[in-house]
Amino acid sequence: MTTDDDQPAIPVVCSDCGTRTQVPFEDVEGAVERHNEQLHDGESVAQVDPEVLDELVDRLGRDLGLLD
Image (cartoon, rainbow, N blue to C red; front, side, top):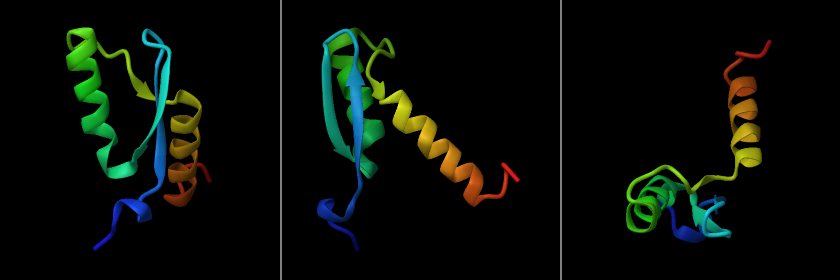
């Protein structure tokens, strides 16, 4: 079993609120969903930092051999 200290922190940004926060990997989906529901009437405004998301997708693609 892992603790929150073992989880990588993923940056989440909201351009409307001007906020940026670090969220443990396993909590990202819920945190983004809650933020958008509570502050933006469910509109998808807050999101994982796009630069970080692009890097994660690239690494996953390489690990899976999809970019070879």
